[in-house]
Image (cartoon, rainbow, N blue to C red; front, side, top):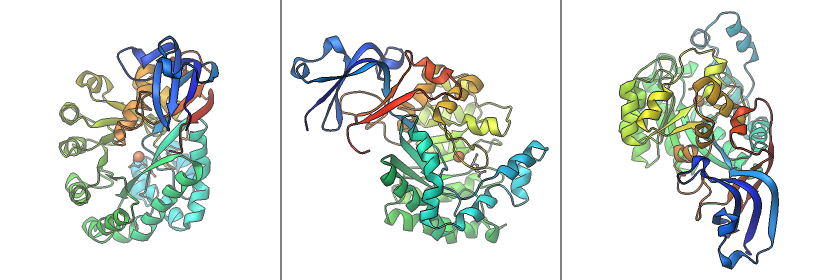
Length: 401
Ligand code: DI6
Ligand code: FE
């Protein structure tokens, strides 16, 4: 395929030493679906200088965005529970009373694959309209072998139909379903582990996740799930330290997890363990906001320790009914005090790493996939600064993701 040359842009490579990898008068060459050049227009190598250029009219170009933590395949909604929480009932209280995740499980089990795809499509499209080209989607609202697999198949199909790269995480260890109440071990043996084997054999699972929490699974239970995942050669990640500190992140880090996510209650030992292993901290300000949490994750300690921080929507019907990654960036800056540059790195470079895709996407560098988001703004800080405004102009893909 002939190379394509893009010019007249503020280029934000998210690579190199300069803030944002910013190049004021940039040019990008795309060849065979990959980035062949991304740098100053003045430095464009001779061999591409005769390629007809397409002007981006001074817009900002970033790596296409990556939402590295979502639960966007589900049935129903939880607006009633939202009302209850506003009249004083806590998330954990509602979960113990059979609401919460269990309510979404019932609504999800009632849907076939087609209906799950149809329900999720508007949420995926909302992300895509912001320049998102890669989305992680978790199972975890089926909680039976067959409905977990249906969720994963729906996620794969959404990616194919929407032309988006979908990475799936198997999250059967999200909650103990009502029929196994008080029998978590049996649930793990009879559903979580066999479902994982089926899903892996069908190529449906890119990573294995679990919810490590008082209302979900203990560290020892999660370790059983991770033993099985690692025996199958699957990468692991963990919902950890969201509502309390069980030291789940440190356990996940010791096992080389790609990411530990939420982390509001992470302590200094957890930070140190993550720094040692290079595990990405995925911060989810939508859940913090929707639950009216007051304890923010230890961002300053994570930063000082050099732990890469990603940001994601956590799009789910209970704790983060949010389908805007730009809003997650704004919340990351305002609520968690990430710098706008950290916020953008959190939805590009570090999000790629949280998905094990650091070699392929997340920055604009030669050899990476050509996946570019074009925004009608003049400076990258505007992406995190605005609230409820979408400046996305187009997404340029060198190939189908
Ligand atoms: N933590 C969360 O915030 C979501 N899952 C999880 O492990 C909540 C999911 C829900 O309430 O439906
Ligand atoms: Fe989540």
